[in-house]
Image (cartoon, rainbow, N blue to C red; front, top):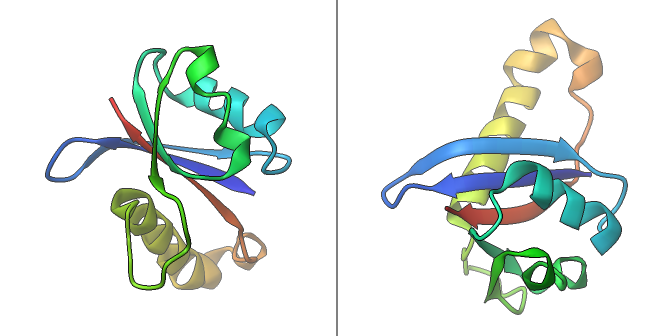
Amino acid sequence: MVVIAVEDKGKGFGRIRLQQVRDASGRSLIPAVENSVEPGSTVRTDEWGGYGDLASVGYVHNVVRRKAVVGENLLPLVNRVAALLKRWLEGDASRCCSPFASPILFGRIHVSF
């Protein structure tokens, strides 16, 4: 599983961090956030329980997606990064380095600094 952190620059994105994690538990997700995001930053996520302790470790946690409603894209920067990465893996990467073109599961963390 890959966690995606994207810096929100208002009209686009800034820094991007990708980190492989063991699973979607808080034990895996919280350290991934700590490795990618400055303490005190606002972290926008869906309502997944693994993010539940973000406030207790020094982040402002803003849950922006409480239900999986088709058609709503409340984490657009993360989704854009995931789509671009998927396009690259399916296109260019598959031509030059096919062992890396296997399917990847994406966890979503949208970060606002």
